[in-house]
Each structure stands twice: as structure tokens, then as C-alpha cells.
Image: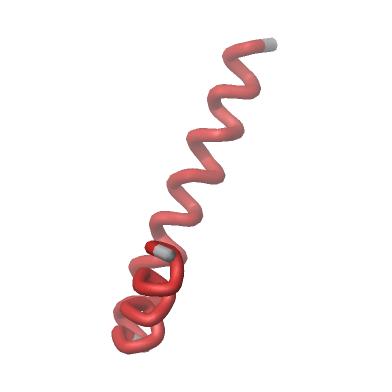
Amino acid sequence: MAGLVFNLKLVLYLQSQCLTESLGFLNPPLLQAAKRWAQY
């Protein structure tokens, strides 16, 4: 069961990384603004 939860978290993490990269590729200023906002 723990392995299943870990795999699910890993998949979600990888998807979020891919989404972030695709957004950064399409709209770098938006990604930079999001990073600045996330720092506060």
C-alpha cells in the first residue's frame, strides 16, 4: 500500500514538473512571475 502511494506521488510530481516546463516554454514571463509570487 505504501508503495502504491509513493508511486502515485511520484507520478503527480513528474506530471507537475512536465507541466511547469511546458508552461515555461510557452510563457517564460508568466513562470517567472509565478516563481516570484511563490517566494513570498
